[in-house]
Length: 343
Image (cartoon, rainbow, N blue to C red):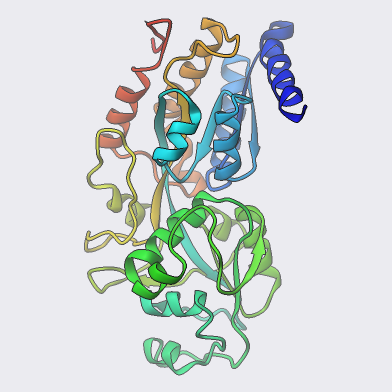
């Protein structure tokens, strides 16, 4: 019965998408790029009179909704695996839209600048380091006055692409983490306080002395929270920035489905990731019209071209040229009954 109601709702929503002379596109998913998407979709509506109704519910929710065909696109920071692709029942296309840095933001008295090694981050999230004045943290931060307060670990409670990026990084740098916890949009956390969305994590960090948590750079900056310098694979302590995040995307596979964590680039930030829009390659499904499919493709094309000007002001890295070229190629494969939709 629930499935019938959901399907009926989707049909009504899609049928209403061109009502009253205004097109509406439905999307849901990642909170990671939400500040950027909010700006992009507002500008797009003002330019083309097409409303984009986007629900920031987490990457897991976005994939669920595009799989159920209740939205036109799903947004995710974790590309679909083989099982998720199979569950969709038809071929999907991943379109990267930007890059972002996942930062370790914290709340300490005076907010001193701190450095973290991969081992320290793993031990904090494994629950092995519980005080900020732990000797292991002090050894890396000589001369920094560290308080003797509890480390309050904050992490996501919902299915999250940001979590996928962060746990993929931990699985690469810590054998213990890989064996005990692993990587994914949802994991069995050894410790920590859960919060929904990047905004929830950022809010908890800001309001809880001693807190440390992973969140997208834009959320940390918006909340005026300091971010730790992270030691990368080359041994350098790197501050999260648009430039250091972009360096991680030096090379990409043809399908753009790649993890950018623990980069070998000497000046690259080690916890970075692409974020994608996922759509069906064949837009002829669920009673959709060719016009609806064309509108979705038109909107995505704008996002990876003119819309890129809004990335940097909002603390996201624009698509590197190689990623933009591949995004175009991927989008060009989207069709309706064999007719290419990208103009």
